Image (cartoon, rainbow, N blue to C red):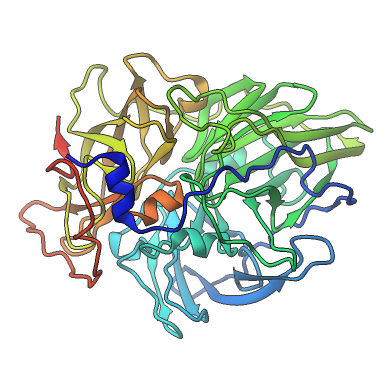
Length: 503
């Protein structure tokens, strides 16, 4: 049995610094705000076969994250972030992706239900100067998804340097409901991230905390100190927590209520009226907020409330109150109220269904094991429903992300989930010493060679091995996983014996 001290000593990682979190209310003290940039919708063309085709070039560039400072960054089709991809349910999509970076990377479609060979995890590496051409048919409800790198051991660095973009899926429900839907006008994408800078304006990648690179400056859609000029009395904010380790507790500075209409996997059954919502790295929420002409309100992150058994909460940014984005309302056009009913959500399993697998999150491990690219942790029958039981048995914050599926939170320590967790999810914050039962369906796609991942989405934790992988198999298929040369990982300290425990 390895102690925490012995385990961390064996990692030989960069020094674990004390907190460097922001405590100022203003992201860029003393500076004027700038208009919020809206990521452009990606160009695409539909070919003769009805396939919508996109092109992405992953490249280096320079961005003005801070006013007057030129920061080296990475981006898709530009210097930072990426264009917003948009497609419709049942539409076939295809991508030509070129890696113009000086090192290999991948492109993972976070939240997307798709074949494992197209998932963009660590097994789909794009070499320097190489091209990758995934293609699939979208088959899931309308949702705010996103894309980002997933190279094993380097994900945090690649995301921190600017590689993130939104992928919006539309469907009949999202098209017909009376919701704010004009992109960039009343339907606003917000990629929220935290960064630190050197005196010259370069990104500071030194001295991560135990939750990763914790920044003292908030960057929204690629700039610090942003404001949004609101044109309608109701505005829909599509929020992505694109940070590597920081958790946000989003609220407005006047404590006004907003309506939560969607989470990771799409619309809720009905809107939930809230005054704050917690969003951990990788999670998405969609909220509709009402304004009156002439108002100015601030979207802000408050101190984190879910902190039971978390040690060094201040060092992890849990005590911080940080301004995110100012909303400025001029004269406003009227819009329809949010409907009382949004989408159907049939239960995947009956209450009390026993778990198929249980997972303990601790340190940089899941069930006492660190990631091994050549180890398949589970095999799952295609077209089956599963219940996974997940527990954070640690005094660090962790969350839990599963590739390919959207899941339902069945219960938390036997209790029904709160409204913010009652919809489809693919990433879930796990408060220490609570047990979360998750129901999911592995439908349609099987592959004996390429696995999907499950992992903590605090990117430092993922990079240090808090991840596992599984194959989805059709009847009669036998595992034939691809082999990867990843030296050093198998020799690191481990605890326990089983990467995935049957319930």
